[in-house]
Image (tube, rainbow, N blue to C red; front, side, top):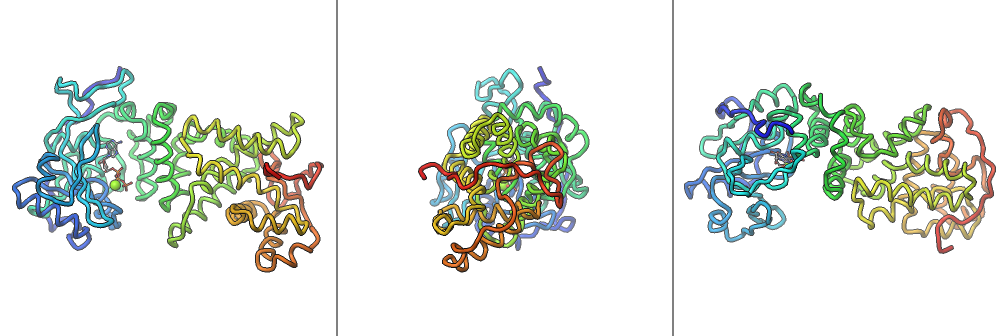
Length: 453
Ligand code: ATP
Ligand code: MG
């Protein structure tokens, strides 16, 4: 059993206004309103967490969290536009139109014997519902960079864990004993990778060291929470760096086990190239303010697993169309044990996969039907990602690009060029190299892919 009191003794360092760059100009006016009102009522009021960290590195925070010594009820009495949420831990939400300022009362992780905090046998934190001091609030946070407080009373930054130096040195460092903190909450391993990808930080050595060993603990975290964390990892504009971080720290094999296996088996690296290409495209879309979808993301992340499952089924003699359907189901079901991908995303994800083999079918009727398929555009974009990793799909991409512009004529065009089945060979050991012609697999073509046809 790990040490139950892994947290260091906090010592306060005050960084005065003239020694840091957190400026009220960069803080949401609504957050400032909340801070000032709390202070005027005689409470301590601080901006805390990701917002202070992001402002210190010159970024623009996506939300502003406030910490205070006022209880949730006291906060509610100060703001008419306030509602209390959370059963496990009560938080105040102060609502300004579409912006919500979350106001949390300082809390402690120490067991005061009230039974309000229970610890799981393996060291996992189940409840932490005890109010505390600002010092206690600081050390129960995950990383030192996330435990900085901007005080509205004198515009100083209060640092209890060495976070100010760590932000300067661009380090993600866990507060306290890393192994214990990961056992309390294994998602912190993903947060280490995600936040360092987002901020361009290194994971500090002692913080990084236990991750490859403890990675399997992630399987104990709630699948719904892991889904949310995946969206943050891959749909916040830092998907490539997040993916490389997961690989480097040995987390990929736990988070996406079948994809990790497929990537290892694919010696040519074509599948990994394709995946990285797709993630880079996702990052570009986020940077341009274009929408990104979880269905497309998971189609990408699980494509290697799908290709590999498909090969296995086909080598067992399962007919192509049936193999595609079964591979899609198998990969989805296996992955669901780890990450709760909601059905509204897994359905379209599978459609994106299954439509890939239809890009080779060019009879007029099929072309028209394909063009009007609700998932056509996503599937076509996916084909584009496959092209980026393998020139073999150039002919199909060209055909369908023209088909969208001029469906009537496209429908009459003759099919040219290469076999457009999914990258079967890409999933195979050693095969599927770029520029090298793939082994053609002879199989009946023209069979419908989606069910209901
Ligand atoms: P971002 O919002 O940019 O993804 P963040 O650090 O603000 O990053 P949140 O999930 O919004 O992340 O959490 C807000 C704060 O709550 C964190 O900065 C940290 O202080 C604390 N926190 C979040 N998750 C944990 C955790 N698993 N363990 C301990 N503290 C946490
Ligand atoms: Mg945040």
